[in-house]
Length: 411
Length: 173
Figure (spheres, each protein chain N blue to C red):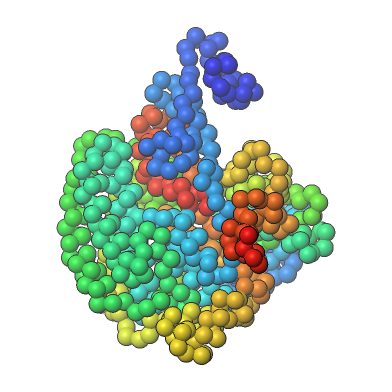
């Protein structure tokens, strides 16, 4: 027993001992993680194995916990966006936009249509980037590196668009309360056009490579399934829930940022297994492209931010040359602007599901309490249930198809 | 037919009487308070009643109100969502400041498991009947509940954040 490095009262120690006594065969403990290339993030899974088969598992999370909720209670609103970036860093703009929308709901700010459409474009680009990573990495974990390297170029193109919009790539810190920091330059529209022209062909090729590939199908069909009832009880949202056959999508249920203006379908799966999750994400990329095209076609003219000088940081050159702008800048930065006492919950459809911000304000410049509803954190607890009785290599495929982002998991 | 908030209020008051109070519509979400003793029953009623159908527990989180009366210093907030009629609600249960305790929701929703562990981890709110109530994001050896308001963001005793290194002393030495 002692060589297992488990406390003797641990339930696995009990199980191993019992099995040894019964038929002399041995169960073993496998530490998957905390730093394992296949976990794509830092979390540990202690697996109880019978040969190659997983009998039980226990997850340990929190290795990159950064106390975002505590920090947020001590930061003015504008300094909280960088925290949201670092949750789901694969689709940071969605988190940013969700935070601005939460604040706009709190402060009763009406956002111009143009801003809403621009936000939709950014959020859908982020969703595509997120799904590119998840699906291509699933390919890698089942042994196909080519697709990953091929489509990753296009995540790069998306990052170039972010770069044109806000100057940064991964952790974008994009936007302001009420809109964007500047209007989109012609370069943004040009890059967006290029992306929309090139990417669909590439994505179709990627789909061809995997979705009817015998090896890939054998590796993913029936792997890590979850039933619809269980998925709901476990708090699944987003593509993972839809793969189980439930068409719940925050964009449709409680539309925000003018999602009601766009025509799109909600792809659903059937069995909630790894293959269905892959297919749902694939189909969602096509829907996102559809939404982006519609948004570009319908893009209204107008300002790129709401007229709310109390909350919208004025441009820097005005701050240096214009008395009024300087006053507003000072007021915003020093937290002299009025904030109502209220409680707000705002949810958006993040890359992984319902990303919610629960904000309680007490009238001061910082939140009294800010809670992030992080979809990863909530559905990752189902992982051990999903892999019970599966092979170890299936556990890896399941984990990567769940798209667990460590930053979002641990906050 | 969509589920009206007045119906929710009527049914709840009818069933739980004094234990549900403070009904208020805050922006898009209908909110109320539930006495900690009947929180679990209210959750069950909202989930299982054929008219309520709040099938999804969106979120569980804790709040610390150090300035409230002793009996109301902690709160657990539940967000629920009815997917059939598309109605969201939120309710809070206030807890005692010295020994915050409430019944677990894990018997109704599997998703409550980690969310309650997180709430325990950060606020020290004990969920009675939880299958595995231990810390989740912080290390097991930690002996404080860090999201309580009495703990400042930065440890005042830190020596590596010396003011002299940041130009914050008068003569900068």
